[in-house]
Length: 237
Image (tube, rainbow, N blue to C red):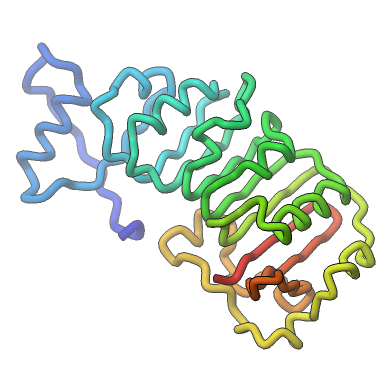
């Protein structure tokens, strides 16, 4: 349960011959009858050094900047990672086949290192990319790729936020979409409650009244909403 109570305590070292994270982990394992949830807060460069940290499920880094290679190393060392939150800019090149794009749930609040080509390669379930440059043609390409079953086999919801762009609503006419009220869909999108608050979707029925619902030839539905700075894409499974 992600909504557990946080406990802060002071720890007095017992063994100065081993590194502090290892000592604390051993202490907590002895203290509790089952493995506790532990939040580690330290610089990303230091985190990479601790290869024994293999049970991280939520990783939120807030350094001044991050390097993609460090993130990829942490992801590789933590196969149970299910949510990656980045509040800082990635300062080096992110490869299109990076395992960052394979994390099940990804939030990048400073996504300047990503392009739309990266977003097309995302293989997870939920994603937020903020401060990324895109235009109407990028959005149409994304929708076309999904309609042709080229991308997003696992996707549930995607939000892209940028500095601003112009989107002509008639560009969606070719998909013969319906208004939400005509689609027969529920009034609330079924976001995963365990990660909803992290994905900036506090309101589960966000913009549903203004969104367009399109259908693929296999019967799968997607909801689309655009405004002057953002694009939202929900897929109904």
